[in-house]
View 1 (cartoon, rainbow, N blue to C red):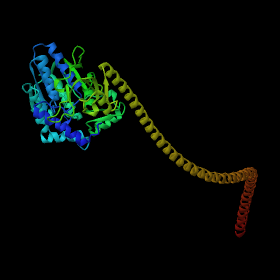
View 2: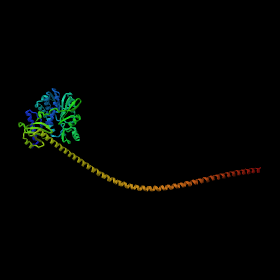
View 3: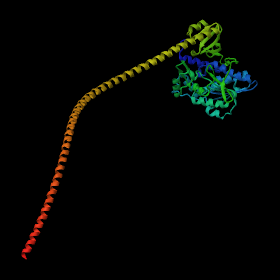
View 4: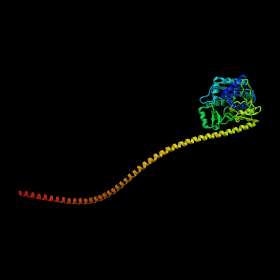
Length: 490
């Protein structure tokens, strides 16, 4: 855009800062990363003060701001109190010290903020801005860590509590928990940097960003950048809230918190953010155009010859030139020119819709590429598994062949065994038959032997009786002869 180098742009930014300091004007430009969030969010902040002031006329509005940086939001609150309530105060709690982990958050803006905080330049610029804006009397500063400062403050004391401190989940959760105690009944708890709600983001990438502690991340589902810790902490504490283009808000009602209704409020960009200085070196031309409002990442400005819509991503433009010259210098999608605001709004809508569709197509292409990679990886893994399975099948078939051969041998052996068992069975049957015949013959023989033994015993007994008779007869004879010889002797 315009052929300027980064060093030229940086020098121009710091030239604008020096120019503002010398003229005693507030500075909220690119130098020192003082531009925190689109100006339209500050319009909603003013509307919150207007809402409470309208409900409680002549009552002071007390604002507690957690995280102030260069003072853009603090000046917004103070000017709104002066415009709508007339009385009140803004208490700013900030360390104004380095707190980013540059190993995780490597963008140039974090290095710029770290250096600005470490040198003390950002705190000095904060003090300059509240003085230059004429609201120093409404602002009180507490330098310290919110986790240590907030527990020391009295409960139910503040009408509005604005949370825009460190974007670390534990710190955001702690700030919200303290804010719920410190806000009065009917008061408002709000905060910056809710670009996407939890329901809108890709959950896997979101958890990964939270795990590493990233301050800022790109959501692949919406193709938008957002603050993961803010999205998660707000969703955990307030499932039902209102999101005003990145400014979230809830209202205390007893022990519960409800969404905030700003339908009856007016939206107006704060005066200290209403003009954008473009190419304004110290002592040169002012080149000031009126910033009307912000719409979908575009600034809507009034030019002397019509209206301009400038994409926020391109930074400053040289609006002192004629519209046709501006048209020739910048891409047609970055700087829109028209004769009415309605035309610019319509063109922005068309570009947004085109970008949305392009982002959807890009997301689908990325998802398809990822799916193809996963499919190729799965196919490779499947092929490897198939090769392993084929090898295993071959080994199995080899084993099955070996087992079949062994089975055939076993079958043959079993057949031989069965044949031998059949032969043995037949032999056993023959032996049983022989045994039966032998037993029968033995039985018959036993019976005959018993009969013969009985007959022999009877014969023996008869012979024994005959012997006994012979013995008795012989004995009688011997006695007779003995008597005979005795008689003869006499």
